[in-house]
Image 1 (tube, rainbow, N blue to C red):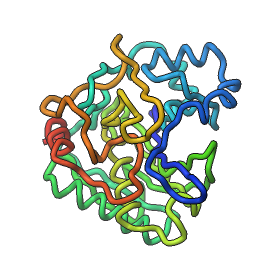
Image 2: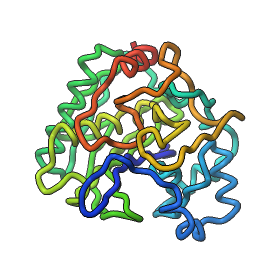
Image 3: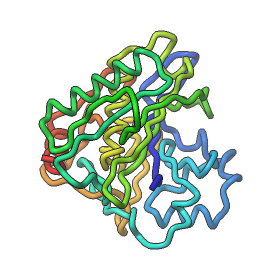
Image 4: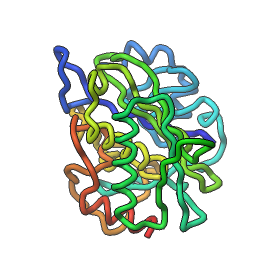
Length: 274
């Protein structure tokens, strides 16, 4: 089931990358005309902000970096609703099951830096000795396919990559898309930068939410977004901190460079998959 897909974004200013990525009113008013009140109500019911919504192919982009499909929004029930915490690591309700398990990954139609970035991300996960391990394959089908798309800046922002949550059947989300536009990674992509984004997107595929879900301004800049209580948000992972967590691999926006697991990220992954 393809449900929520996440987009990691950075901003462009005067042709150069900056680390502050989110200012809600930049994308908001002009795009919101494309979205009906009914859809906004569905988005709110799923536990996502309605302050920064615009229509895209197949669904809607919310909170600056999250894709919700039209099919998922129309589903009844609370399958994807999760509880808000404050500043800790979070997971979705759906996780990868049938453990221990090897998750195969295939890169298709992308250049050397994306292949090497995938290998780097896999190496970092496998070094944790979790009950899920990753293996890159070059032929046949794979549990996760990494492929490219080409999109320039939209409203001053550039999308780096996208992915989604595990299925109701306990399988990882099966697709990661990486932006091949030069504004995303430049004409000669840095392997550690690309690998860090792939590492982040794999995190979503196995059920991780953004560390700064409650306040995206922490990594993206701009106005804080906090959905508050009321049965929405993300499932708190015990043992992770109750204060802003710098450099987490699951922060909402990229810092434009190399970012891997910090100590609290490892606590979160061990809680779920050790």
